[in-house]
Figure 1 (cartoon, helix red, strand yellow):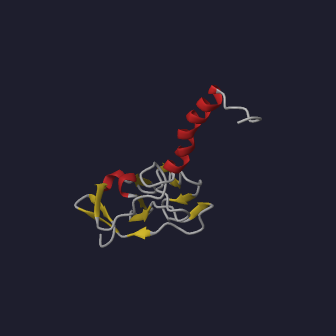
Figure 2 (tube, rainbow, N blue to C red; figure 1 turned 30 degrees about the vertical axis):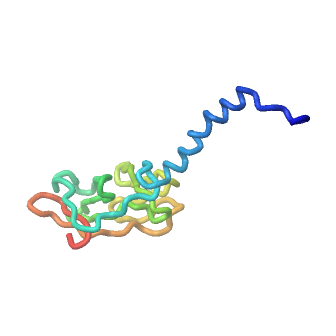
Length: 142
């Protein structure tokens, strides 16, 4: 077209190189994309691991089941869904007893489920949990 410069080879190649990168943001916040709206918490009881894996005052994250289990000072087990209450992302990081959501940075207390840092405003959902012959079992009707 007259009066309109054609795209250079460099412009076309740069655009082609950036297109896949732009899609990474979508993939990171989509199911299975490493931190987006995720597979739900357990819908049936799941066997998580040895009861001895969770120290008194500590917590253990079971990413594959979207559950965190903590042990209170009295030795009781507590379990919470690790689906962030802000945008439904799967929380995949535990720092000490703080859960960190990869999508928007919400932080939760793994021992109580309470929000430590926004944007989330609601606590994590508590799940039933019990020990069965030394194995932690969590989820509905656990």
